Image (tube, rainbow, N blue to C red):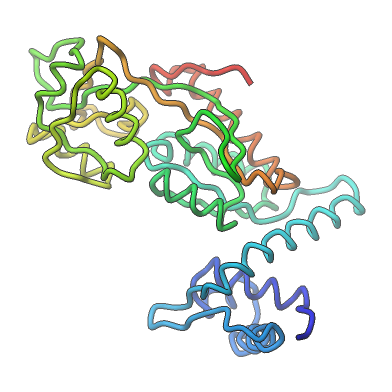
Length: 310
C-alpha cells in the first residue's frame, strides 16, 4: 500500500465535491484523463475502489466516503499550515456552507454578496437543503459549517446558538384574517407540513404534544415554495417562520397569523464538526454568517427573531 500524494487527495476531493470527473477537471484546470489517472493511482495504492462511476457522474463508495472525511481534514490542515507560515495575506480557500431553505431565502444573497465582494480569494459552496440532511453532510465532512435548527451540541457536533424565531400560521390572505390564533384552533385546521424527518415538523409536533394536541396534516411537502403556494391558495395552511416568506411579492403574500396559547419558537445555530474546529477561510465565513444574521435581525428584516447572547 503506497502513501497518497497531496495531488491525488485534492483530485479525489474535487471529484466527490463536483460529482463529475469532467466538472472536477474543469474546476482544477487539468485534463480529465490526467485527473482520472491520479484517482486510479490513488485507488490502486489504497487497494480500494473510492468512486463508483454512473451515467450521471461519480459517487463515493463506502470506502470512498470514509477516505473523503480524512481527505477533507488533511487538506484543511495543509491550507492552515501554509497560511500560518506565510503570514497575513489574502484569505484563500473553498468553504462549503449549508443553509436550510427558509434561511437561504433571506440570508444567502447578502452573505454571498459580502464574501464575493470583500474576499475574492474565498470560493463559497452553498448547499441548500433540509436541516437534517445538512447535519448529515457535516458528519460526512461535505460541509465545513451550517446553520441548523438546534440549541445544544450533540455527538460530533458543536452548536453555537444565534437566534430564536417565532412560528406563524400561514394561510390565504383575507380582510378578515385575525391577528392571533390559538394552538388549539390550529390543531383543527388542515395543514401541509414537511415530512416527519424534517426538524420543523418534529419541533412543531412536539410543541402540540406538550399541550395534548396533534396536527391535522393532509400532505407532507418537503418544498418551501410549494408549501407557500398551497397556503396562499387556501387549500391548506402551513406553519412557518417569517423568514420563510422572504422575497415574496406583496400581491402573492399569504397571511401570517401569530400562534398563541402558547407561542411556538425554534432556535437557529451555527454548527460544525466537533473534532474539526473552524480555522482559516471557514472561520472567517462563520464570522461573516453570524454578523449578517445579526444585522438582518437588528434591522428588522428577520421579523420576530430574537438574538441570543454569544
